[in-house]
Amino acid sequence: MDFTHLTAHELHDLLVRKETSAVEIVKAYSKRIDQVEEDIKAFTLLTRDRALEKAELVDLKLSQGEEIGPLAGIPMGLKDNMCTKGIPTTCSSEILKSFVPPYDATVTEKLAKAGTPLLGKLNMDEFAMGSSTENSAFFKTRNPWDLERVPGGSSGGAVAAVSAGEAVFALGSDTGGSIRQPAAFCGVVGLKPTYGRVSRYGLVAYASSLDQIGPVTKDVTDCALVLNAISGHDALDSTSAPVEVPDFTKYLQNDVKGMRIGVPKEYFGQGIDTKVAALIQQAIAKFTELGAVVEECSLPHTEYAMPAYYLIAPAECSSNLARYDGVRYGHRAEQAADVLSMFKQSRAEGFGSEVKRRIMLGTYALSAGYYDAYYLKALKVRTLIMRDFDKAFEKYDVLLSPTTPTPAFKFGEKGDNPLTMYLSDVCTVPINLAGIPAISIPCGLADGLPVGVQLMGKAFDEGKLLQVAYTFEQNTEHSQQRPALGVR
Amino acid sequence: MKISKEEVEHVALLARLELTEAEKDTYTEQLNTILEYAELLNKLDTTGVPPTAHPLPIKNVFRKDEVKPSLDREEVLANASDAEDGFFKVPKIV
Image (cartoon, rainbow over all chains, first blue to last red; front, side):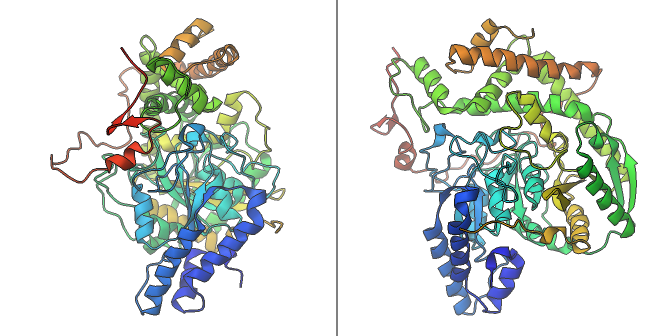
């Protein structure tokens, strides 16, 4: 039996029926990694020995007749911006290449307690800045559906690993679309939870008012299971929300009858591929057929989300990344004569060009004389964008749009103009500004490449998103599609 | 031009980034492109609109001032390029 196509809940059923063992599952994934990783290059580091030890503990529990949780023995990977005690955490950056965290991120700890073996750390755009994983300081990750194309980003490694069957699930992080955009490009399910739903303690910060950790999974049921495992208030993250966490699996109901779905017309503007638009129309038709009430609606400030994001995110990044000074951790330039030169040279050597660009932009937007014109203006526009969503959710249960304007693009295709790359996040960025949850699920193939439909919900209403996504999945075949990957 | 090469040099100093001449030219051009794009925001009248710095209405989250276990000093210093006698070490300042 090929375990590497199976979901967490399918593997869990096999485990409790004693039809396999956790060690066998880890070995199967390890073998799959040997077969495809040379082509995909999803992992920055493999931790297979630790994964096996963890699996042995789960098997011991099973042999003693103990009950195991739904994710026990289910091998996964973590984007390499989540701290893992004693295991390097690099953010795919030269500056953190030798950083070994002395503590675990809260999500790392939660998944460890859930009994999930960690297969390794996953490649990303450096410091999560990018939309193709081409900004990794180490290597490019390839899209399992077409090795000449990007997996998307910045959680490209996380998504490619799940898509290629190298991990059952993964955790990514999403600041402007970094879970949903690659999930769409690689044909898997990706959820950005509500801001504050999942603790950011131990997530290396990029833009603190936008960053959120979320699941990358093969189906919607797994998404609910992983969300259950990682959600909840955390005293170690003052921005985590003190709200109750429901059992998200309760929302896995095949029913959208009477559900009101709004389709914001601004998300179908210029730049949207006609084949993507056609697949989104098919998804809309499917929801109508299933009894939902689907209507066009408007989020009038949508066009301002991108320029606001590209001031707010770099501003926060310039502040957050000020900590990389070569003193306490990270790369230090060797020949510096004085402290100021040491700071400047360490950062010059340690950061890649996109990170430097955003630090520069953010420093400028926050500097004396420009703060009001750029940063403060962007924060006011953010309010208007949030109000658009508030108003829409007075009328609709969820909103629906394409996740990305096009399917996965080729390596190097976006060229030297950073704006061209930024625009691949045009449908995902507004959601982070508003802090609301959104999920991307597969909705078909355009010329053999996956396309994702995005569902957006009210703050802390991930349940409804999961219900709508689950219903779509149960009534279509899209989520069962897997890339026909050559095996070495 | 929104930002000159001299301003780029000043911002680089504020950001503690040593840039090559080529980088200065590239960033001058690219920052101008992005800032031109940001001009779009000025089409909107935001008079009377409050700024949103953060999506959650959480303010001043305090905890009790209690002694709790902290990170092990040796483990923390192990990540530093240079350390001595339990301290981080940097090049001479004065």
